[in-house]
Length: 396
Ligand SMILES: Nc1ncnc2c1ncn2[C@@H]1O[C@H](COP(=O)(O)OP(=O)(O)OP(=O)(O)O)[C@@H](O)[C@H]1O
Ligand SMILES: [Mg+2]
Image (cartoon, rainbow, N blue to C red; front, side, top):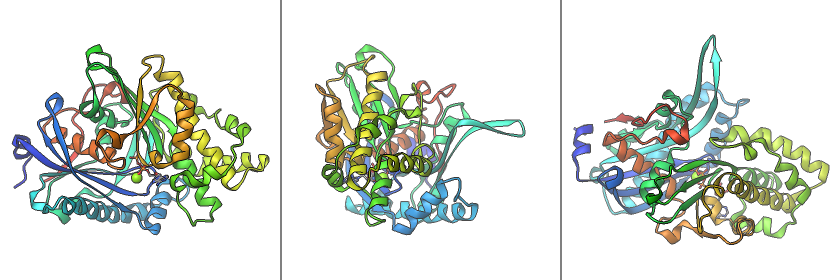
């Protein structure tokens, strides 16, 4: 019997964190041994694993996410299909550590976001913000025989927050330093930043989505290669292209990029509709092929840097920025970011002992640990919730 109270009493827990982000490229898993909770938490990564979504699954995830193509029968099926892929990825991480599922205490799954509506909408007088992550956790529990905690965002939304970002709580436990500010920049489909002021300063952390991560670059690469490539490996296409600076300037007028935090973005901001606008703008400028890839990659870097200049640097000028997520593999993007942020070291997270693809999955393992220990792990100051809440739903 896997009761919550038994899990909470364990001295240490082996937890598989699972994450698939807005890029919808596949599931990342991180198996971590966690001791304690809250400020007494200790952690050690045992293995990481990834499973790419097959092309048809990725297409289905994107279809399900878009207003024009999302259908209830597709979402219903996909919920269970993704449950299988999340379970497969968890098993891969378990085997990668030469362990068996029986030796694992908990799986903590973020799931796949297919829609996120941070602005309240109303039906017949009942108004609410909402968010929807799928990848049925009952399927994961059934395949592994391990209890699962998932669906982390909804409790924060119910408490008046926007349900995102949730990773900053884990960032604080994992990376906070006593005398130095730490800035963590994740570049997934969307890009998001966490600023951890020095612990001894007693200042609150700051975290928000800065705007596009790889999402626009991926869409352009897919388009200009007629579907042959899903992303710009190492930034090679961008490196071969020439930036259209006038178009970058136009793109920098983006409302979300210039908006003050708190703010959270998704495929709703930089998906199909954005791509349509971009196609119109670039046609006028006749930008195409690798030049367009270079241009949107340049915009992506500048959008991140602009958010720093406006909202981060006025609070702290950090010595270094630690970068994770798939964008950290794009050499051209990283080069642009370094140029934009002269004088600050831009360091891949691998140099801090965490594999670049594992950071978000690691964070959800930490959030799962807090949930089973009965510790609230939203940060109301960043999500806008009215109070701290214990996140997640539990399948024993
Ligand atoms: N070798 C590489 N070169 C260039 N870009 C890469 C490489 N590997 C991955 N990427 C980019 O990273 C993306 C995937 O990043 P990641 O998995 O961190 O994002 P995500 O799934 O949106 O996650 P999250 O929302 O948790 O940040 C790919 O879609 C691609 O754009
Ligand atoms: Mg991913």
